[in-house]
Image (cartoon, rainbow, N blue to C red; front, side, top):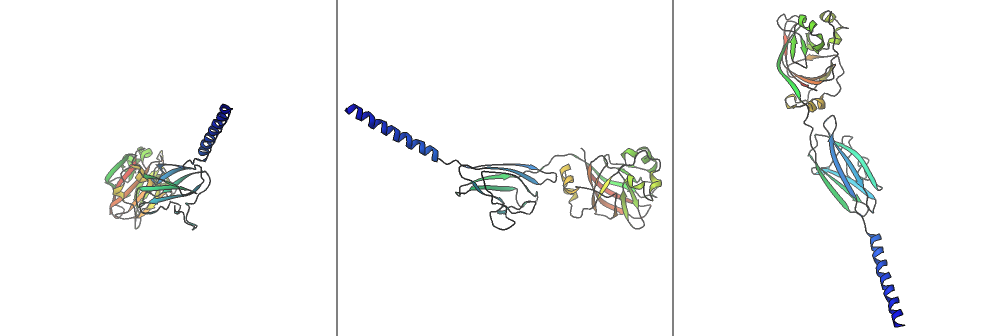
Length: 289
């Protein structure tokens, strides 16, 4: 009888221990996870891919600090947990995945991402943004082109090779010519060979086998031409050239262009000798690929 009673007590104790252990495992809390990776878009801005996953408790906020202040993305939204219409840090549910773009001109390259759940438990991931530095360019300096009545210096320019052609040579190298220099009644300008076929310049390109369609930007007043060292730098400031010519050029002006072959380039005017017999001097940078 005593043996039976002892076995019963031992069984009860074992059940109690097992039951307590099982309950403890069921009540254990799992933590949230935060993964952040970075790439660059065509403008060189920082694109962060954020993957937030809840643990046992739903997500509450995702904030981003750049330097010492809450970061503002390229859409103008602030990544804090405030209640204003511009604050976008409040999230919910058990998962949040998003691409967030911040300007490459941000105050700091350091971005701190903090994910907080509804219990107030937070985890932080710090990322140092990297810039795109790839893309070789060709550089041509002190390139002189003559105006339409200049008998000594050619007016046609091949942006991909840096070659300057006289009118006679341009005709036999028409497939290479990307722009033509011309001095109007009061101003210096570059025009697309394609544009000349529908303008007063049509006689200049008469008999050409190919008229390349180059597109130009307007003047790029705030661009640091000398600071551009790669193709990405050109693409950052020369996005969608759309005009057939660029005029009113003076010393110091910077403009962008896109060849018919799709290569982006940028040029800086370093000198202008006015008149139809004058000339223009430019420095040019163009993507190799």
